[in-house]
Length: 467
Ligand SMILES: *Cc1c(COP(=O)(O)O)cnc(C)c1O
Image (cartoon, rainbow, N blue to C red; front, top):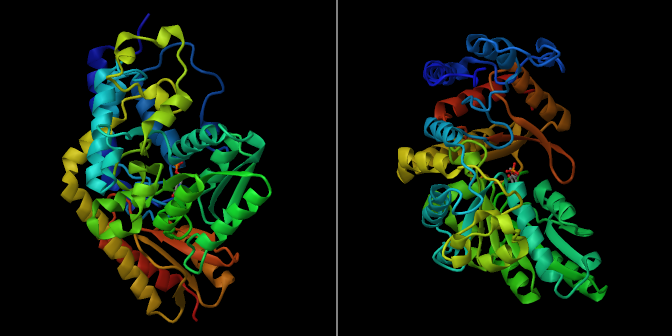
């Protein structure tokens, strides 16, 4: 029997598929950003049962165009302005290829020393690149680990905070807090971690958490015999990229003995440019932090960077030691075993794609992309603000433009729908806390330039109702 492919066949088809991917990137700009496909249409092209006998790989490759492409939403189109970016780049894709090729399981240092050490080193590089607290380096009390997603990272932080609070309180009484604009992963993570109480705190007119209301909620909970355990600050909310007052929340958390987690899933990448770092002022008061290189640092999903200021409570919470996972290197205490830093045991070599990307772009290459995206977004915001038909609903501290049509929700929704239906760009229709409609334009796909954002501005003007 075969083992699927010989090394020579792998060489041949591998090169064909590299060409296929390169061709895709050359033509993706010309494709409608979203597919025109009915639910079930892709499955209908697949045979009902898996093949009993080997099929020629040329037929597998042909089915990429026949079956897969009709159902692809083009996140890597430079005309992608929806949600937040979920970026890729050629160096990162090659990092994924090698990671798959080496097929490591890096749960222990000894099961893949390179997986562990390059990951620790990349996390330390990012501390300097982003101006994060030096104590978060592996040479200090803290450290970083790559997780699958910000949701996983936040869930992990919630578990450690729960464990710490449970020293003195019952699980029934433990409370987590976040802004009413915090990402759904905070509340979901709290639920998964067994918290019975999650309190969304109302926001100010810039959509940032109100610390007076946070303090009042903590006091109310204490008066009711509850145990406040966890608070999340957002640097760049998903709704409008609002920035919570990290330092003030950190001071409250210190005073009240809460675990302080900072969610910078999207905006964290911008901190590679020093001019944005005032938005993360107070990070040295955080117990944990997450940002996603897989959003806006040109590294393919999945790569979420999770840091703790002190790694001991994390490891104490998550370390379970069956005999088959004990070994001399681990017991020496001189190595990191990343299985103790998150929920999964097995873990792949994700640091490769980060390493390839950071070296191929250089920090300056990443900075110039981020600055180009922010500049283009701010130019679009200024253009919309100058047009009597539109109003901005939130500031643009990074590269998200939040606006609406002055004629109201129907005109706003119609505009979003018309742009999306054109296939020439894709943006997101959303709702403000008062449930009025607005449009999110998120600039950040790797290959998006000022020209693409100008074309989007033209499209918005062309498709808009009069004032
Ligand atoms: C995107 C986002 C998340 C969730 O990220 P995943 O990696 O998909 O879990 C969490 N928080 C914020 C602020 C985000 O923008």
